[in-house]
Image (cartoon, rainbow, N blue to C red; front, side, top):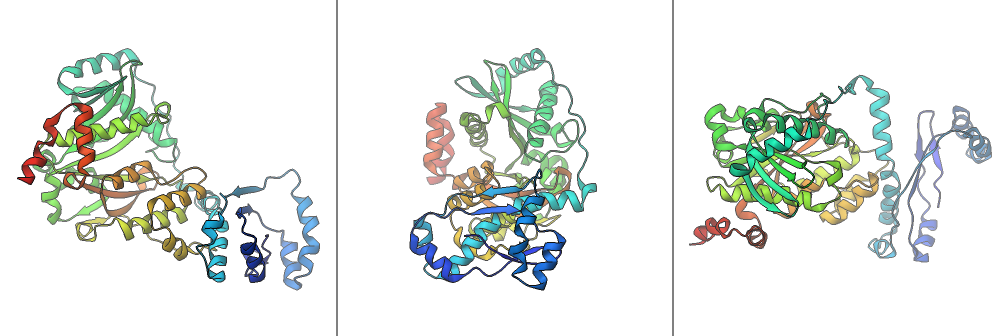
Length: 435
């Protein structure tokens, strides 16, 4: 089924879809493939359509041949299965759903065009990234860390967590790799290296490929109690994103602040790299009994369309949001959910009630890019979201502030971690809590 439209000089607006055709489609019981064509008629085509609707189809051959040699953007969505169609008994609701599935495909195209055309001065010019630190220098420094700062080993990988000041050359390479990796997904500082003042007194958790002598990934870790004692709440990176109330100070003192996580591109296809990064974080937290929480921003790239961001934020606020804790963290640049033209957002909000279904929608809309892996990983461990903020210093990416209480992590997850690392001591605090 194709949809004719009502036109103005500046835009094309779909006419109401014919119910009789939709009934035939539903009765056929076959998968429906949503397809979105990005395009518009010439001013003459719009004008003739305004004079009389019959002039528009007469004009179509001419409009078609005018496109010769040009580019027409098209997005093809995944089929709407018969089973999925049968969820909509009301034909009018079915129409709303199909229409939204079509127009949702175009939201990412519209977003990029709008930003480039209307606000070209907001696109920061990226500085050239610094040269890599020589491999032999990195290898020597990692060897020096092994005795005091290696957490555990798994196959070709070793996991470390060490103060930044203990590894100046490794830190420099981490800053370079951060910027390279973040730019690849539309984020990054656009500076030659992604390092800041926080790195000077934070620790770096590193997944090290000791066979190929390469950094596979890293996480920045702030020791909350030490930060509060030395700098107060202003010493936390999240303070640059959220205004923190005094009620949150006791929580911050018991928190490890996480941020700037990345997996180098060549290791992203190996799930073990991300798995080891997470194992390292949990292991480090479990070994430090005076810490209970993980807290930090999880980024949603500005490459995502406004519509996808709306969906993600609404979903997490409805299902995984801690409104009580959120009162203590006020965003400095709040994300506002706004209506998306031609897409029935409320319908999507209503039907995307599980993270798997939402991930599928986002994956389709954003062309093979679903909900950020980090967010999904946090949720799987029973974390909560306590705020959303737009970060102008990081390519306007959207940050979800996440907090994880170690006592909310599924016990089986912790038990499996203990077994894999062969360290039963990490479960001692939980047995003590039970007694």
